[in-house]
Length: 115
Image 1 (cartoon, rainbow, N blue to C red):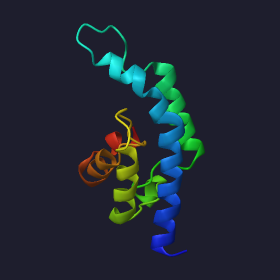
Image 2 (cartoon, rainbow, N blue to C red):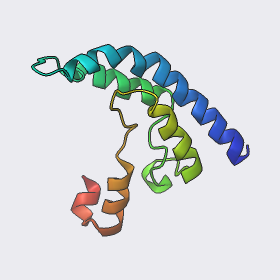
Image 3 (tube, rainbow, N blue to C red):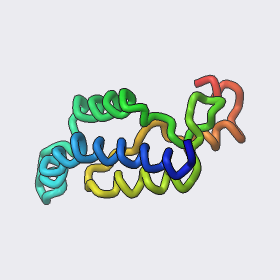
Image 4 (cartoon, helix red, strand yellow):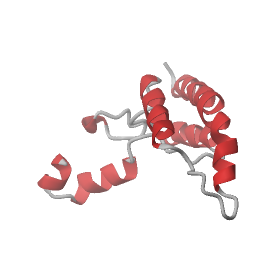
Protein backbone atom coordinates (compact mmCIF):
# COMPACT_ATOMS: atom_id res chain seq x y z
CA UNK A 1 0.00 0.00 0.00
CA UNK A 2 1.40 3.39 -0.95
CA UNK A 3 1.70 6.26 1.52
CA UNK A 4 -1.07 8.10 -0.37
CA UNK A 5 -3.41 5.09 -0.11
CA UNK A 6 -2.60 4.68 3.57
CA UNK A 7 -3.23 8.37 4.23
CA UNK A 8 -6.56 8.25 2.38
CA UNK A 9 -7.67 5.17 4.32
CA UNK A 10 -6.74 6.67 7.70
CA UNK A 11 -8.32 10.02 6.78
CA UNK A 12 -11.57 8.23 5.91
CA UNK A 13 -11.56 6.33 9.22
CA UNK A 14 -10.92 9.50 11.23
CA UNK A 15 -13.60 11.37 9.25
CA UNK A 16 -16.16 8.70 10.17
CA UNK A 17 -15.05 8.88 13.82
CA UNK A 18 -15.51 12.66 13.81
CA UNK A 19 -18.93 12.42 12.13
CA UNK A 20 -20.24 9.65 14.36
CA UNK A 21 -18.61 10.39 17.70
CA UNK A 22 -17.44 14.01 18.00
CA UNK A 23 -19.97 16.08 16.09
CA UNK A 24 -22.93 14.68 18.09
CA UNK A 25 -21.18 15.93 21.26
CA UNK A 26 -20.81 19.50 19.99
CA UNK A 27 -24.08 20.91 21.43
CA UNK A 28 -23.14 19.78 24.95
CA UNK A 29 -19.57 21.00 24.55
CA UNK A 30 -20.72 24.42 23.31
CA UNK A 31 -23.21 24.73 26.20
CA UNK A 32 -20.33 24.08 28.60
CA UNK A 33 -18.60 27.18 27.23
CA UNK A 34 -21.48 29.57 27.98
CA UNK A 35 -20.86 32.02 30.83
CA UNK A 36 -22.22 30.63 34.07
CA UNK A 37 -22.65 27.14 32.65
CA UNK A 38 -22.35 24.23 35.02
CA UNK A 39 -22.28 21.69 32.18
CA UNK A 40 -19.08 19.63 31.96
CA UNK A 41 -17.20 19.81 28.68
CA UNK A 42 -17.46 16.04 28.38
CA UNK A 43 -18.45 13.48 30.97
CA UNK A 44 -16.02 10.78 32.01
CA UNK A 45 -18.30 8.27 30.27
CA UNK A 46 -18.11 10.26 27.02
CA UNK A 47 -14.31 10.51 27.23
CA UNK A 48 -14.10 6.76 27.90
CA UNK A 49 -16.35 6.02 24.92
CA UNK A 50 -14.20 8.21 22.66
CA UNK A 51 -11.06 6.40 23.81
CA UNK A 52 -12.70 2.97 23.43
CA UNK A 53 -14.11 3.66 19.96
CA UNK A 54 -10.88 5.22 18.72
CA UNK A 55 -8.97 2.19 19.97
CA UNK A 56 -11.43 -0.22 18.29
CA UNK A 57 -10.94 1.67 15.01
CA UNK A 58 -7.17 1.30 15.26
CA UNK A 59 -6.61 5.01 15.81
CA UNK A 60 -4.33 4.67 18.82
CA UNK A 61 -0.64 5.40 18.58
CA UNK A 62 -0.77 6.70 15.03
CA UNK A 63 2.37 8.78 15.45
CA UNK A 64 3.82 6.92 18.44
CA UNK A 65 7.15 5.14 17.93
CA UNK A 66 6.88 1.56 16.69
CA UNK A 67 9.02 0.24 19.55
CA UNK A 68 6.32 1.53 21.93
CA UNK A 69 3.51 -0.16 20.00
CA UNK A 70 2.65 2.75 17.72
CA UNK A 71 2.42 3.07 13.96
CA UNK A 72 4.96 5.92 13.56
CA UNK A 73 2.98 7.37 10.66
CA UNK A 74 4.55 10.11 8.56
CA UNK A 75 3.81 13.79 9.13
CA UNK A 76 1.73 13.98 5.95
CA UNK A 77 -0.66 11.32 7.25
CA UNK A 78 -0.83 12.93 10.67
CA UNK A 79 -1.68 16.26 9.02
CA UNK A 80 -4.68 14.57 7.41
CA UNK A 81 -5.69 13.13 10.79
CA UNK A 82 -5.52 16.57 12.42
CA UNK A 83 -7.46 18.16 9.57
CA UNK A 84 -10.30 15.70 10.16
CA UNK A 85 -10.24 16.13 13.94
CA UNK A 86 -10.31 19.89 13.39
CA UNK A 87 -13.75 19.66 11.77
CA UNK A 88 -15.23 19.39 15.26
CA UNK A 89 -14.97 21.84 18.13
CA UNK A 90 -14.90 18.97 20.64
CA UNK A 91 -11.34 18.78 22.00
CA UNK A 92 -10.20 15.20 21.59
CA UNK A 93 -6.68 14.01 20.92
CA UNK A 94 -6.22 10.46 19.72
CA UNK A 95 -4.26 8.61 22.41
CA UNK A 96 -1.55 8.36 23.46
CA UNK A 97 0.17 11.68 23.87
CA UNK A 98 2.93 10.88 21.38
CA UNK A 99 5.04 14.04 21.76
CA UNK A 100 5.44 13.30 25.46
CA UNK A 101 6.20 9.65 24.70
CA UNK A 102 9.00 10.72 22.38
CA UNK A 103 10.35 13.20 24.92
CA UNK A 104 10.36 10.58 27.67
CA UNK A 105 11.97 8.10 25.32
CA UNK A 106 14.77 10.58 24.59
CA UNK A 107 15.48 11.98 28.06
CA UNK A 108 13.42 10.06 30.63
CA UNK A 109 14.86 7.92 33.38
CA UNK A 110 14.29 4.18 33.23
CA UNK A 111 11.66 4.51 35.99
CA UNK A 112 9.81 7.19 33.99
CA UNK A 113 9.93 5.08 30.84
CA UNK A 114 8.56 2.07 32.70
CA UNK A 115 5.66 4.13 34.08
